[in-house]
Image (tube, rainbow, N blue to C red; front, top):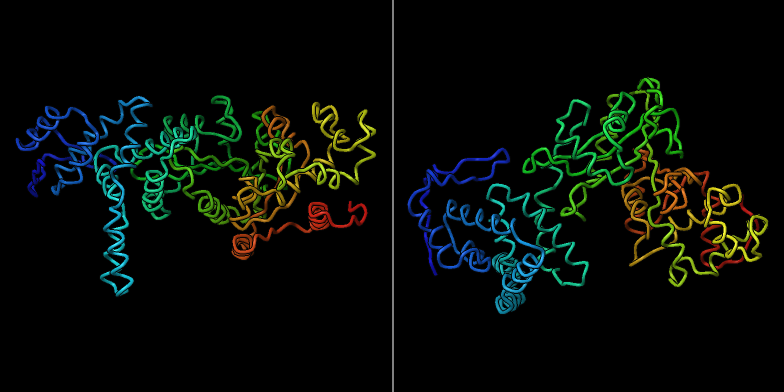
Length: 481
């Protein structure tokens, strides 16, 4: 195999703003020019050959040049070519099974530090070192994040790319840990490029043009984002906050661009009403918990008048969960009947159906028209959805999982708090408040993570018990409201 060792003098390399190598072909020594020419003449942009050769190189400069070639080749690939590339990485760059077994046997015989180090080295796939070397080139981090995004898209059709995904996720957890992230407040004076990306990445409540964005950045609003030094002007995650008087369940005034601006010194509540992960390739990498807690700390330092920190959160999968009555862990017909028992007369009076479950679904075809009859039943169903419905051993609702695992408590549920079309479609207009009380965050987090215990506010305790009894099928004890 061709092997060229680069000299330590790498003056033909410059650095990008993200501190990654960029090679300049006009200043490149002859040996590296010859390397590129030889690679292209022999195999073109054969990724198998390029990747194996990148792993064989010891010189930092030649590694960077090869990594840049891989990035260039990847960036012009069509979807089918990416699939072949990913499958090749999974197939040919895994750990050596024999080496792993021998190292494991040696460690079993003698569990000392040297054998443990040897076992650790054996079980790490060469694929991880390949990805590290690709990351040294200009736009390396950006390319690898995009690569995982493409991989996740392809994985939805049943393609098994889990080994590569696991390695990328493992590396990203180190490269994107809190110590490398920089939190910035986004204002109307932030660069237009970042503001445009903010509008594009908003995934909870769409930003409808510049006037809408400007209102979200007024004096009674805050927007904070995490940035990474390798991704210039690219927000990783951002949160939008409204400074208000009191906690509300009504989304409309928070998003109304004509709503009068409240002087921040008059506010007593900070409401987190939208949090958006920006890059698909970083899905599953935890940022939001750090961001919210940092924002709480910063706001508390800026505003002594703000005493309450809460959310106005969606219930994104409620409609889907309610429709799936075949799931024995979800809203079966029997559970729904028990949950709706206290409201059977109201539901029957609002429809031509005597059965409460049938009446509910009939009226949900026009939820706003039937809002008076549906409000209380929907709030009970929503409480059951947020606290009782599970999937794969976890709460069904990802927003509830996020806030409860951060140590927040479930405070209130509001029928018809979001009357926008997407809110009605996903959750029949329901919203929820979670409260972040600094003194109890750690205890709530531990109880939720270790025991699955959910902290609810005093106002919800009685209803929470009624929902839990109905869910388990315990004897009915009368109306709880």
